[in-house]
Structures are given as C-alpha cells and as structure tokens.
Image 1 (spheres, rainbow, N blue to C red):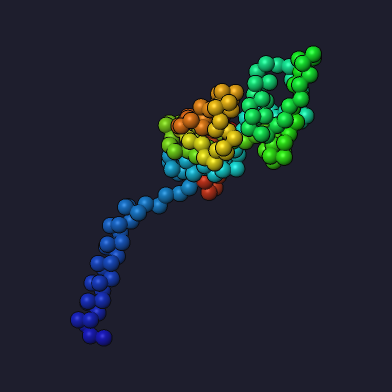
Image 2: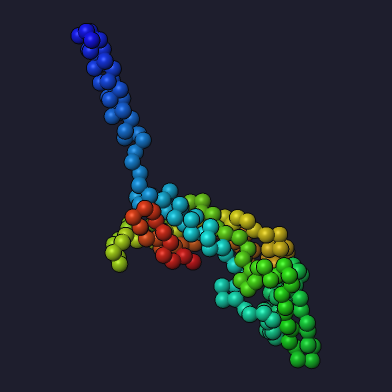
Length: 189
C-alpha cells in the first residue's frame, strides 16, 4: 500500500470517527431507570395493562342479596346490561341477584377497561428508601378496551366514578420504584 493510500484511509477513518463523536450526544444513552416522564409512563402502562379498573374493588359474592337502595340501583344497571338476573321479594324489600352466563365471565369485579397513561403532570425527585429510588407521580390517562355494557346510560348513572373514567381524560397519582431495568408501580390510586 502506498503512502498516499494510507493517508486517504487514515483520513477517512478520522472523519468517520469525528462524525460519530459529534452525533453521540444527539443519540443519548437513556436507561430505563432514568427518572424521565417517558420511563414513568412506560412503567405505569405496563402495570395497568395487567391491572384493569373494575366496578367492585371489594367484590360481592353471588348470589347477592340487598335491600340498600344504592346497591339495588347499581345491581339493576348490571341486570339491564344482561350481566345479572334479579328475583325480588317485595314483602321483605330484598332483591337477590344472580349471574348470567355473560356475567359469570366478568364476575365478581366486573372490570371495564384499563388505563393508558398519556402524560406525567408532576413527579418528586427520586429518594432512596427501602434500598431503591422511588418517586411519586401525578399523571393523566384515558381508558382503553371499555366494553359495550359499561357504556350504557344506566351504567354511567349507577357508577359515576366509572362514567368519569371512561368519559375522557382523568388524572391520578402513583408511587414508582426503580428496579435494575425500569420503573415499576409500588402503589396506585
């Protein structure tokens, strides 16, 4: 190889190396454990994909009997949605609710979708507690995969919290902890 060819090869390598070094800050080396809104959103969405929102956090067991007017209104909405049947004892003022075939697949919690976090409103600086960094975040979200039975007017009237959640963008808070690879939900409301 001649001296001229060696200089050209060396110059080409030098130019390529200089270009790579200039582009390095632009590409960044982001880790899943960096306290960024994107990493918080990824951790929250992974959690909510496995933890749907449901009508009953403390589910009733079926058959379910009640004389309470508010519970009767809620259960009657599930009857209208064909998830329950009802037998009434007017003299006792008690209604007895049983699951339909469709209701059996959803009972006892009657989940109506899962959250998809669309943005982080605020977060605290990560602090080390129990051996790992944690942060409190406020976020906003929309509901995905909401079934038809949850969208009826009677269901919305009987379950106003659900109606609010499926009606647009909602907000909530959570505590996240950093693992070796990402942020995971410790508590969520």
